[in-house]
Length: 119
Image (cartoon, rainbow, N blue to C red; front, side, top):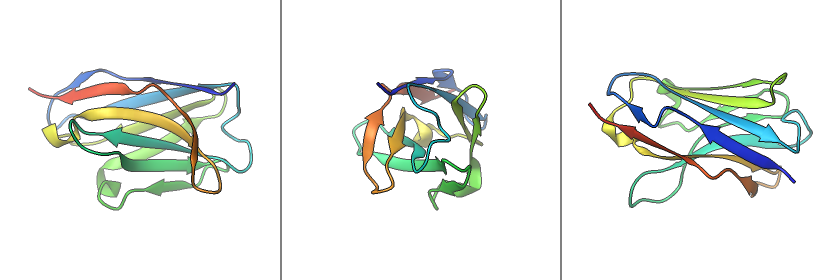
């Protein structure tokens, strides 16, 4: 059984950098042909794709967030990390880590971590 567990600070001040970690168990993040992705859901809104990293380390970013976003991985810990720079209250959301198949569907989700951006 694949499990994904997000962790993060909960509260971040505007202009700071948000850093989130996703710890994966039950599967290796280097296994062909999966993508590991971050998706967020702002309050009262739909899901928004943020970034993804492929099994071989190739990264992908939402065009609207690319300038401020960095996704990386630690294969020794089987973890993903998302960094979002210069956050604003509009970055307030539940952030989910998920596994994406090569067909483009999500087959495993984390439970999500709530992030609030506020002074």
